[in-house]
Image (cartoon, rainbow over all chains, first blue to last red):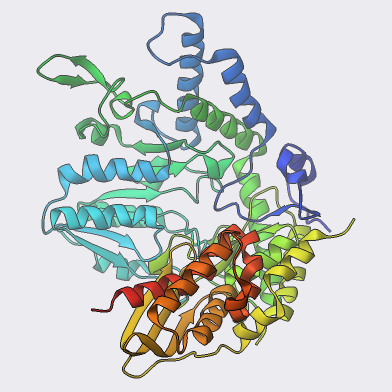
Length: 412
Length: 146
């Protein structure tokens, strides 16, 4: 029986053509949303409409199509700004991905502001995309990268975190929601602590923006990075939001067209925000598709999405645990997202995923780009079922019914 | 409608593979190995260590230790059983034949022993890396000789 929430999940599912797919002769059950979400028709149609009716390069053409494309692209930027509570669209920089957004901060702000002997503080549960850039920057300039630990339940103990901050800390970079443990971090409290120590704060929102109502001013961060494709948008579009004062002080990331105001043989002046950071023809269609995704999410309502996911994650965690599996991270659904990492007996997650695939069930298996976290948990890999608002309790039941098939095959 | 998925899953997880997975041969550390290497599969975090005791150009004993899926563990177990007594050149030839099998090329099945059971893995492209991991690690171990 489908659990009652404010969402009409059956109607929502009809908006996603791929959710009707048959995989290996069985209806698709898609539980790999932390890797990428599926796309509603409204997003797919926005991409088609752009290419069929508006395709032109943005910002420079003096013709009707160029004006339409520019209006649609800049309209998407306004939608992003409103969606994340940004004071203005000037602080919204379109990138290729959350990874590129973080690397923009590394190369532009990081090289100009972090010096030998300084410290960068991250957490042990960071995705490689918010770990390797800082590891590289620290090695490049002789700074120290420090890792705040988690407790047994996957939380960040704030007292221990605070003790790792000092005058030397120049940047605190951490995830808003773990892609493995699901942990939602106390972003505001950490940002306030970091600011008291004089550090800048980068928040990785790749796993939070799709699921939680975001307001970057309330979160108190200086930089906020996320990708479009985990929140119903197309791949290849991401966002860096940053405080405009900080962006103004930063040197450009990529150099080329669009990012300049004036070029002479001797040198160049930089364009205004956010164009200073958008060299080259941008992913116009991707930005427009992301705008359509935001419209869709706002129609459904982020609060409704969160309530549905809390109920479904609670149901899923109980049902998965009842099979004998071990779930990592916070055990209360309100403390986490619906990214549920688990291990089932001593069966390798690859083998679990393979057996589930034969049932039409898509989950993820492996280290989830979090190898230091895997080591901290004492495992080489986990299985992960990750939910979105179009998932149902029936799909969770199918997952749990299939797990014993893996047990029969692999138990030693 | 016949369910081709079941058939394919059976072709991946053949009984002999599950047997090697449940009861691996030559697993555990080798005291004073002459050659050894550690291999990682960055996709899934699988790890395997291959240790060899040599008698000149000939492999006298093979041991492996691994944390990985059924395919990588079974592959390591099957490979270890075939390597004992082989020369380095013969071991390298076996690796090449196994790689050819994983890429769907025709091979001489006679020489493959239990490894022939892994033939079905080639229908699951993501898992080919798991099956190849022990062989790639063996190559590293052999290449490490002075």
